[in-house]
Amino acid sequence: DAGVIQSPRHEVTEMGQEVTLRCKPISGHDYLFWYRQTMMRGLELLIYFNNNVPIDDSGMPEDRFSAKMPNASFSTLKIQPSEPRDSAVYFCASSGYGQPQHFGDGTRLSIL
Amino acid sequence: AQSVTQLDSQVPVFEEAPVELRCNYSSSVSVYLFWYVQYPNQGLQLLLKYLSGSTLVESINGFEAEFNKSQTSFHLRKPSVHISDTAEYFCAVSDRRTGGGNKLTFGTGTQLKVEL
Image (cartoon, rainbow over all chains, first blue to last red; front, side):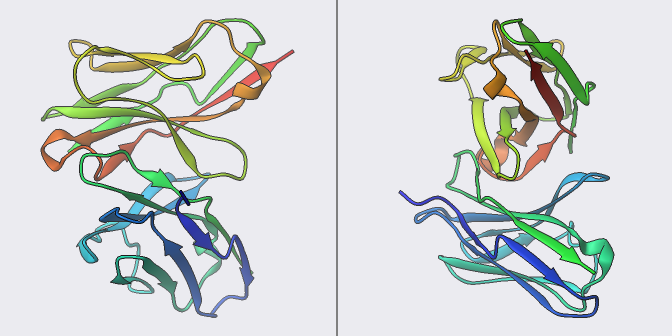
């Protein structure tokens, strides 16, 4: 069974560019989470969805960040415009009700 | 709201020695407890979980953790570590009322470094 799949694995782009991170959750999981990991702030929950509906976006740092889940098998996290301080590893995770979260391998984002 | 404290940011230990990684939590409601492990350049993997029942839970690779409600702790232990255990370990909690698999609050992580 495939795990959570994230793409791209690495992204390097210049400040001001739009960045789109993608996530395919495990089939049958109805919760999807986006996290950001940095040395300074550790692992932060940005937003999570239940049945494709955003439930809690209180961790989204600014209006430059947006997330969508158009269907049960796909989600995107978009940063527009990107800034150097957005450089981090972004993780997607999914889970079923009452089940532990399963994480993808992350997208390492570098904004120059 | 919950919070998780991992007091040790780094724990160096020699191979075959025992190790304990400490985790304390704070919550006004009952919680589920988890340990996740992160190897370099990888995502977090579930190591073990406490949902209910026996307060001592074990993983397939020799780690164990004990839920202590009175001390609000969930320390992770292994009697004999291997080089391959070198990784970062995260303790996490979630609100029982939301089903357990949902919103997690993570600690800041403990880097376990096993040396020869």
